[in-house]
Length: 194
Image (cartoon, rainbow, N blue to C red; front, side):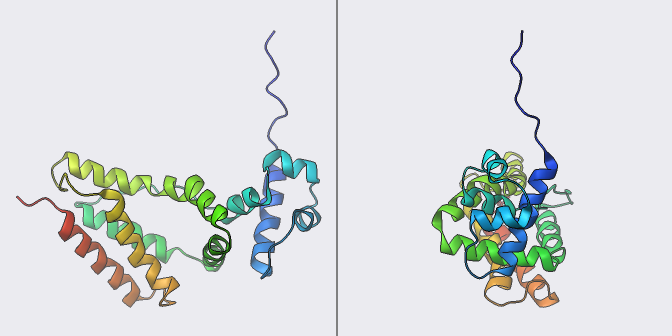
């Protein structure tokens, strides 16, 4: 006799809770409580805690709602692929995505645990496609063997974030051009010389 796997996962409950958490994050300047979340979602406290052991876990899940892992479309060169990826991501930031991005920054600055959890559960996975692109470039001899690929990606991400977070200009042609220039500069410093 095989053991029962437990209660099947109810996607509708998760969707209600995450939608309520997103609404609360977007509406409030202070932290919402689990009581607020239960009231807004209409889901029982027990059902919430079965899925997320703490408020921080719900916040981290809500901050990544509706985001997917990037799938790179390879272009003729690594820099072209990187430019397409970064410009496409920035171009596709709608008002809801921008609001959640702002909340990710706010929540992470407020609570280092939320920042760490968000990095571990979401950001580190999202970086994997670009890191694989760069690793493949190393294998083919296009990227120098001594390059720290994590740092190279941090430099490009930093340029992209700077446009929106510091300049307040996510998607203008000038911001896009600055990100492209940053990609070209990073590429020049990491590419293998023939």
